[in-house]
Each structure stands twice: as structure tokens, then as C-alpha cells.
Length: 162
Image (cartoon, rainbow, N blue to C red; front, side, top):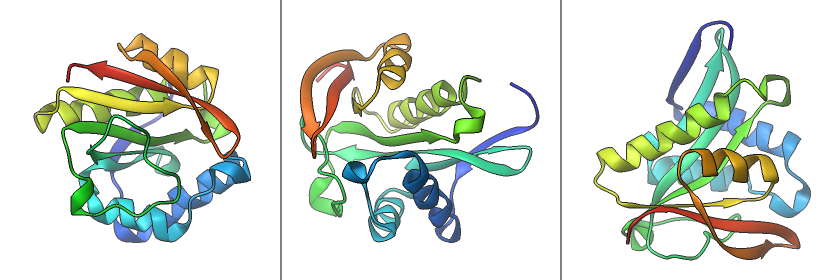
């Protein structure tokens, strides 16, 4: 890792940066609208974090409370009914030019810390590629079950206890 690294909650004006980065790296089957990103940021602002390297936006993680042991449907809006006893890591993206430097792991660890600080004991994410799966395993997530997100294979991973 080189340069000054900052991880902080994104303000409402910065949410577009995350949406634009997602549009660059995800296939269309994993699309979520800007409105969806704004909804998730408004639902749980402290869980919508940006990664800045030397002042430049280079990635993000979205995490929030969830009320199920199943994945959050893509491009769905959250509301107070969705709060529950699971802390869900909804999305994690690092700009391709910054991958392999440990930033993804940093963001995932920060997301888990937020959940722990809030009293959560069960954490969940869906890995849609092998890199995320391996990174999550390094901090204790275990593979649970396979799913399909609009034809894209994913793996539900859990950490902690119910």
C-alpha cells in the first residue's frame, strides 16, 4: 500500500461515485440503480464507506442490518422492516487499478467492526467471484450455500453465530 489512505462514510453527494464505479466493474446482471445506492446510504449511513487513496475515490463497501439469512435482492429498496439481527455486507468494490493492495480486506474488516460495535454477532455476504471468497475466508467467513443473482453464480458466506 502506498499513499495516504482514508476510509470514511460517504456523504449524500458522494454516493454517485460508488454507483459509477459499480457500473464500471459489474456485469449488467448485477446492476443496481443510483436510487438504490442512495436508499442504502440513507437506510444506514455509517455503513456506506468510501476508500480514498491520496484523496482519490478508489472503492467502497456497503453494509447494513438485515432481517434474513438469505441474500438481499439486487436493486431493492430497504426500509425499517428490513432491520434484523444479521449484519449484511451488501457490496464491496475496489477500482481495478488499486486491486491487490489489501484495500478490499481493509474495507471488509471495517464493515465487520461496524457490526461488532453495534452488537451484531452474525455477519453475511454474497461472494460473486473467487477473490472475494478468499478474502472473506481470511477473516473468518465460511461458505454456506450457492445462489444465482440473475444468472451470475454467487456464494452466501457467513461469519459469527446466530
